[in-house]
Image 1 (cartoon, rainbow, N blue to C red):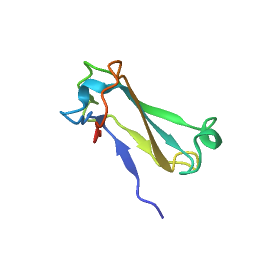
Image 2 (image 1 turned 90 degrees about the vertical axis):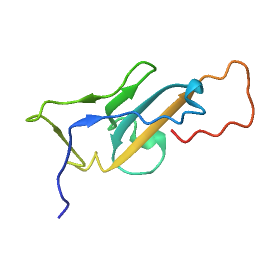
Image 3 (image 1 turned 60 degrees about the vertical axis):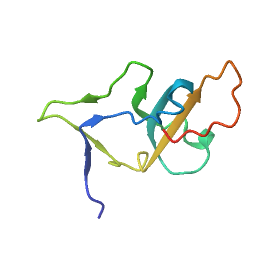
Image 4 (image 1 turned 135 degrees about the vertical axis):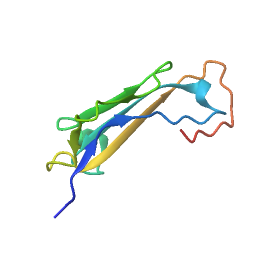
Length: 94
């Protein structure tokens, strides 16, 4: 069987060189790694980040399971960027 994984917090890790272009991102659990559209109904958001958010940690006796059912078997990360000056050639590793 599969081991239980419990989420107890989230910490954003942004690339220093390109952080100014990261507008926000979301992290969700979904059924599998197939297309965005096929998982949209069963996707569960577990974290969202925007500038100023330093992350969070739950109290010691609190957490929630991930990968705990058939609809939560893959992680989906979506990053949105803002580059109004149209700076070219930047590669983000956030």
